Length: 96
Image (tube, rainbow, N blue to C red; front, side, top):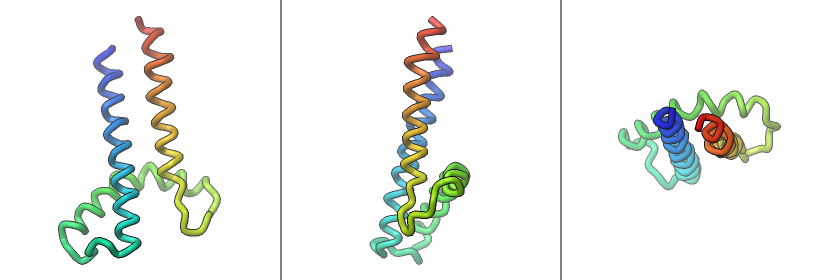
């Protein structure tokens, strides 16, 4: 059971980094720091969008429109933090 919890924790940790990378990429794209016509940059952007959008889109529908500020990644990061803390502080001690 410990291996399963560690694997879930690893996946949540990796997704945290993907969310952070996606947010940084979107800022760089919005401020025209990166060349959007570059095929490599475009493929990275598509990958990050395809991986994060299924999780972020439902949260965006719930959150109020704040203009150009997107708080959905922050909400997902807080949920991931809660899940990881709950898993290690509540579920794991019950299984020992």
